[in-house]
Image 1 (tube, rainbow, N blue to C red):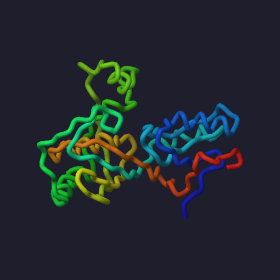
Image 2: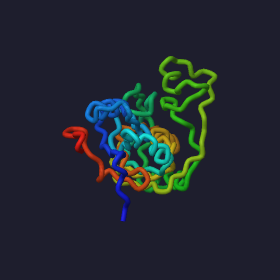
Image 3: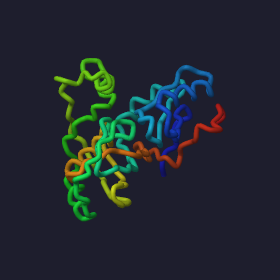
Image 4: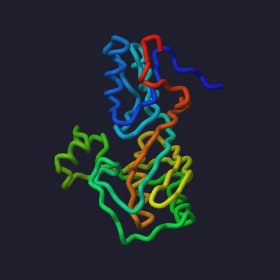
Length: 221
């Protein structure tokens, strides 16, 4: 049986359009304390499981940051984005061929198990104390070596495919960039891709089904 979160750990289903810090601020107001933190961010366009620590629970977050995660993701094939998500400048690749589902499965097999992933240029990864997305927005990436990391992809399966949208589920090691995974799948297919939807459904043993919505949340939970 799954262990319940400690009383000072709060599982939230983050809505789209909010940053993880926005969620922290809302919970601070609800609980009347500044001592609120989170274990791993979600991009503003993404939804899903966000683990918060309240009061003494902030000390428990360190052990939760490195847990494996599961996501539901939708990639838009046949185009690329400067930010690898819907918020960037979109470039269509009109000349690319439409891949068949068996071709997609063959390509996905190359990622299953894991691969060396180049971080997203619009990630919060720090280079000499500065976040990559800040450098990218300031146009200061010239000469900056984007870091690479071996990531583990324990599960990668297609849920739905209707050109140009590919929806998949991925379970992966902490620190895996799903935007970068979508980008790399698109490049391997020769048609390009960027992430249009992302929902985190699991962090370690904690699942989205246990999470609470921000609307209606009170200090009594």
